[in-house]
Image (cartoon, rainbow, N blue to C red; front, side):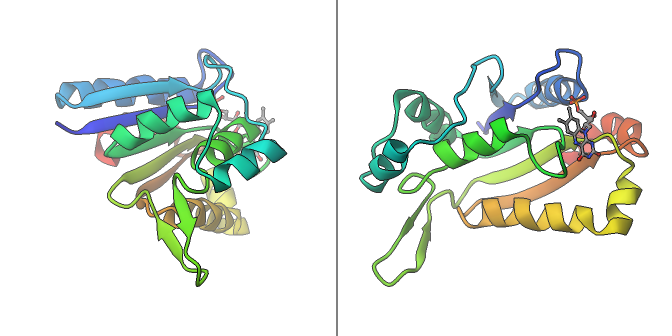
Length: 184
Ligand SMILES: Cc1cc2nc3c(=O)[nH]c(=O)nc-3n(C[C@H](O)[C@H](O)[C@H](O)COP(=O)(O)O)c2cc1C
């Protein structure tokens, strides 16, 4: 059976992010697939990487909270990241999760010749991001392309296959929410 991992990062209980989270849970369960949900705010996940975290990762050692999240990732076939757009980027908490959990010697490693081992190969990932602005504005200004490029680089570097990068702007949000099933 397919194992899905939803990682949600939203500080607001009735947020669009939480609507997306609940929608995805419903759809995946209806498909009789396994679903694990990690809510970074509810977990009070520490996003701050330390000098010790970075040096320990060289030896494949991580803090307890990170190892727990890495277990969820090991078991996942598909990963769904849900986060709002803050300052034309992902929120600091989501970024800190990626920096700490999808870390060196867990999600990627370097060979002696400098080439990269992409350790998340075989897993798919998709993102779901509410935003305040109209998506059309972000497309016209080039910011959507910039965000797409940063998000893609973050995941491709680690070997994920990107299923989709989705934005829920003021102009397409209701349509996207009503068509959630077709996005996954
Ligand atoms: C700190 C902060 C920064 C934000 N920056 C942006 C931004 O750069 N672009 C944008 O379109 N919306 C921005 N927003 C608006 C949110 O993306 C928008 O309200 C979104 O719908 C929030 O999703 P949620 O309902 O899941 O919390 C920002 C909101 C906050 C709180």
